[in-house]
Every structure is written in C-alpha cells, then in structure tokens.
Amino acid sequence: MKNLKSLQKSDFGRLVHVLQEDGYSVAAPVEAGGVLAVRPIESVEEIARGYRDEQAPGRYRVEDVGDELYFGNAVGAESAKRFFFPAENDLFTARVDGDHFVLDRMADDPPRWALIGVRPCDLAAIRTQDRVFDAHDESGAVFRCESETYYTRAREEAFLVAVNCTAPGGNCFCASWGTGPEAREGFDLALTEVGGAFLLQPGSHRGEAVLDRLPVRDAEPSEIELAELKISRAREHMGKRVDRDGLPELLARNVEHRIWDWFSHHCMGCGNCTMVCPTCFCSTVTDSTDLATGAATRTRRWESCYTHQFSYVTSGPVRSGTSARYRHWLTHKLGTWWEQFGSSGCVGCGRCMTWCPVGIDWTKEV
Image 1 (spheres, rainbow, N blue to C red):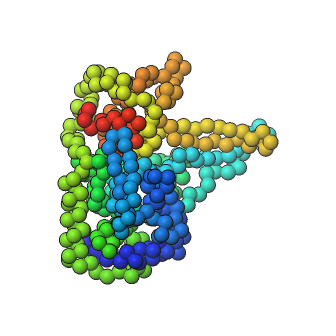
Image 2: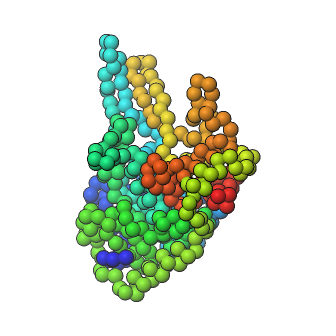
Image 3: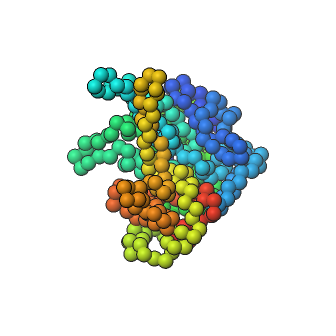
C-alpha cells in the first residue's frame, strides 16, 4: 500500500459529488429488499451502512447492526458485470427499404458509470471479461464485433472505486485464487475503511485527478498499520480455501468420474450460478418486429449453459443431462478457460455457492 491519503467519513459525500461533477452516473451498494444491491445513487446517504451479511452454501442473510461501517460485508449477488455487459441490450434496429435492410439505430451509448465499492475479486472478474470481449492477437490488433462495442465503450468510460475487503464471507476464497482481499490493479481509486476514515490509494491518472479535489491529508503510520492488519486478518479468515494447483489437469483426467452423477442428482439446472457469476459471458439473441413500422430489433440477453436449449442442434442438445451441463460449466470455469484466456474463469467470490438453491459446495467436491 503506497501513496495513501486519509479522507474522513464525514467527507465521503464529497467523493460522490466530485464524480457527479465529472459527468459520471454513480452506483454503489444499497439495501434493497433484504439484500445489498448495486444501484444508481444521488447522494452518499443512500449507500448501505451498518450492515453485515451471513453467507453459506444456499444461504444469504443481511442484518442491520447499526454501526458506522460502510463496507463491513462481503459481496452481494450483483457484480460490476451488468454495467458493462447488460442482462438485456438492444444491439440494433433495422427496417426494410426496397430490397435491402437499412440500419435505423445501433446500440445506445452506455452511461459513464462510476462504481463505488468494487471488491478486489470483482476487479479480477472485470479483467477476465476484458479478455473475453476485447481480445487482442499477438500483433496487438483488436477484434471487436459490433455486438461487443457496448462493452468496450462502457469499460473505457468507467471509473472504478475499489474497496479492500476486511470482512470476508462464508463462501469467499479470493485469497486462494490470489484475487483479494487487497486490490492491487485495475482500479482508479482504492479505499480501505479504518475507524472514522477511509485510506485512499490512486491507481490511475483519473484517480489522482479526483483525489486532488478531495479534502484529504497524508495517512498516519498508525492508520496504515491498522489497514494492513485488517487486510491481513481478512486473508487469514476466508470462509473457504481451495488448492488450485493442477486443477485443469485434475479435471481433464476425471471427465468420466462418478462425481458428475452425484451432481446430476442434486443440481436443479436452474442456472443461478451462471447468472450471479461475475465472469460468465454466455448470451443469446432474439429478433422482434414492429408490425406498425416494419422495424426489426435484435436484442442480446444473458443465457446459461445449464438450459436445455443452450447446446441444441438439429439432432438435439449436445449436453442432454444435468450432469453433462454441470461438468461443462465447472471444467470450463476451472480448467479449459486457461486454454482460451490464459487465466481461471473463477475469481473466488463464492457467489455460485451462496445463490445455489440446493447449496452445492463445489469446493468440497473438487
């Protein structure tokens, strides 16, 4: 941790105000219907404060303990993914003009998001999705499909305020994956909550420019020591630990293991794990036509490899059973993702276990 500045919590609202002055739409964790969800905010008073969460396989509970901590909880169901890769997004609208189509409208420009409270595991997930949606070849050339320019524009415009984790959840294992609990890259500003202040670390030129406009002072050695201690304790008290060494090879050797049949008797095939996963990127497109105007719109929506129709071809689905679909998801996430993108598809956030309705803990099965 370096170049740390201290911002009093009473001045936290100034950060929100500065970001709004710069034209950002600000989003942060808020309490909504018993969960902590990332939503657009207008003022710092809307940010969830004094909440704790309890997470276990198939279990999520939020309690208002009434203290002064803003970020004394772990990740909720929502990650930053939907701000760059929306769950539903119109790609273009076209109409027939004589014997050809004419494009009426391409995808709308995304908002300029400033996301406050991005956890280190989600920063790692964003970097993973960057490799999926904005791939480079060895020459450095960029290949972008039209359907993916929304993601590219949204990412280029986004301002990320990360929060170092000091209270990991019952399903967290980012320390095993090397993706947390401390943010090391990919942010504009990083916060660590210590007593009545935040320690701020800039991670980009944009972050430094925002920091220069805040009422900050140099962090005291005692504040830095406390921040490092809280992060160290979080690293030592993860809810789970996973040995990832040799995982791709382990899975490749066991594609016919009887454990997949166990999953078929427990997994409901609902796709919850893929919907909350911050790195899953499967999607489908649908076309709709307005009979009054003749305009046709193509819409992209999130899809899940757990659905029966996802791998459907003329002779039927390639993966017809739940065990095959679960095996595909887990071996891709932990194994073959390395071959595609040079990293794991898992960042250790634990959401897939928390939001599994039958509480499957795949870390034990692995």
